[in-house]
Length: 223
Image (cartoon, rainbow, N blue to C red; front, top):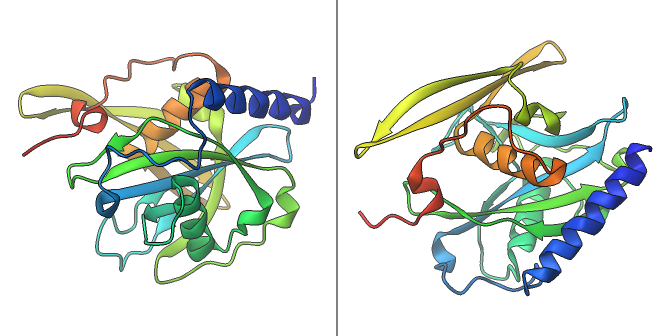
């Protein structure tokens, strides 16, 4: 079975899952304060070798937060955004010139929560024709754009971990090291956790390692 057929089956399953949840991707979650709401785009496509790949960015070193870190395209909700998918698409266009018209948004995953009280909604989308994507980098926000195999986030080969503790709760931070175009990138923390969850859903299997993610990523904290 070709990946193109496999990708269509993945898309059909994600659409069905979203439908079975009883909500369309355009419906807002009323439990989240819009001023503290954000969305990131897990943008998938078929690679040259037939593998499933995800688009990532390295944030500019001049950014006020998470400078120089690898991230998924995305950012905070703005007035006029009709959905989490709209937020993720708008931010992706601003950051890397990704035209929303070439991306099909398929599903919104359960949110993650940050220590800064931001509710982050991961949006899964697919580019059916990757040749239509010509990156235009916004240098004030992004240093570089690259892609990595989604399946990497279920494997041990490029992974390392660090044991951490917060308010008496022990957890693991996962780090994935990836080299492409003679550059080395480390995908870690919340971005890695989101990709682990997305890969588990799409490939329908758990990772080959213990997740044990921070409790505060899955539950809104009140500090």
